[in-house]
Image 1 (cartoon, rainbow, N blue to C red):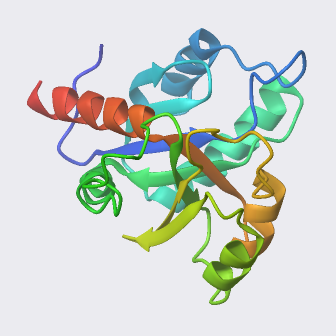
Image 2 (spheres, rainbow, N blue to C red; image 1 turned 135 degrees about the horizontal axis):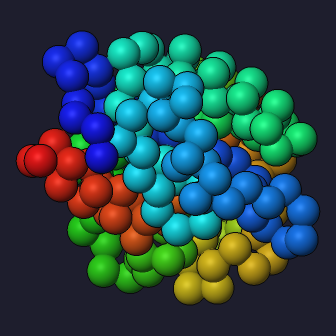
Length: 191
């Protein structure tokens, strides 16, 4: 692995809608191999759903634009990418509005991040459509949805609707993934 230079910052890039079903395949090994050719160093991925941690001498917006352009060129389909500074990830972990609710299942609780600032009426739209079992909260510029014990089954809060409510592409990760990404960031900053 390459050394991290002082001018580089770590970022979390979340790819949306990849490796689902038989289309939109984006192998994580190929993604990791691509990153250094783009100046994105120390690439690490977590599971196949498109969780990437990299270092770059750039801004989050520049990293997003670069990845979206290059992934389209290399893999032949458009991929929405939501990028956050790795240093911001801690705020998601500590601001989890359901952290003290023992009835919440880690696999049913999702953090959603929006590419652009959320639309002012996002909360109202999401709450109007939510099923009675679903709980929605906002913290640290993100949306948290507890889908309840049944999980996403029968939910009317589809990715397309969440995008519409938020006003831009979004992507969600369950609480287990949020914690694993945080663990990876912590480990890499210690190295």
